[in-house]
Image (cartoon, rainbow, N blue to C red; front, side, top):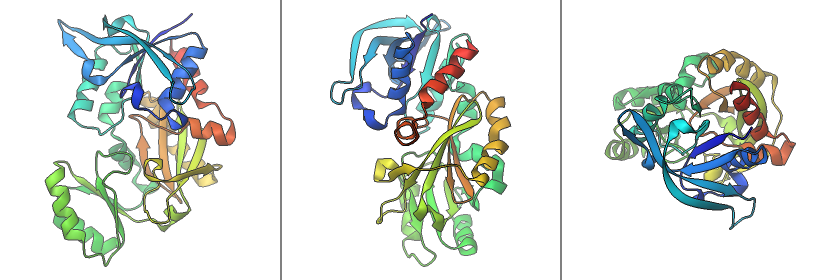
Length: 312
């Protein structure tokens, strides 16, 4: 039986289909006979206890430059849908948080993936701190004196915004770098939230591994190798994806975090691992589905939909 499936996302016209996991999930839903509906988060409305949005029926095709068609907008009570994929990109700001509050009012009768309350309560750069022994030395604070002391203690560091994404605002600061104070001033002017200071891991030159888990189980991975002139491995900023296999240490990490992911009902998660250390647990809008299929043939979109249909 086909499911009415809403996808809350940034506008479909702006995605790059070759590497877009939301697009892959939509294609798999169509393949299974589910009907897709597209809407952006700014269309959400809460009135008289009902959450609605102006949604458009959507059809996808795997053709660059001609990858979607949309029907007319129809204001719809979202509780009439069977599934909603929460897929807009961060930043994880108050706008994002508000959408989780609204969607929480219809979940789980309308299944929201990932669970909106868990997404709100477990930002990727904070949830990971529950596993401090699996991480590099990390400090979250807005106390700039504390960051300076941390840098003296650990040496080369990564400095980044707490709720950023896609590598934006990420800086590698060697111990002797004289831009440290200027960078803190820049962060102070542009961000109200705390920062993350993290010990720099030289193993990032070998790659930053994205491991995808479905229902807590690792199902695929890619290695993202940074460009020669960049400390960041994100593919948004020039990182190169390559085939990889999981190491024993990475399987240990996955096994450790599995109970927490299952307890919080995270269906689709991507973790980042550099060398022997986990740096993030991505639960808002994980990526990597199409790259994994390209390199290994594993169809993660199908596995995600198997998990969704199992719940229904």
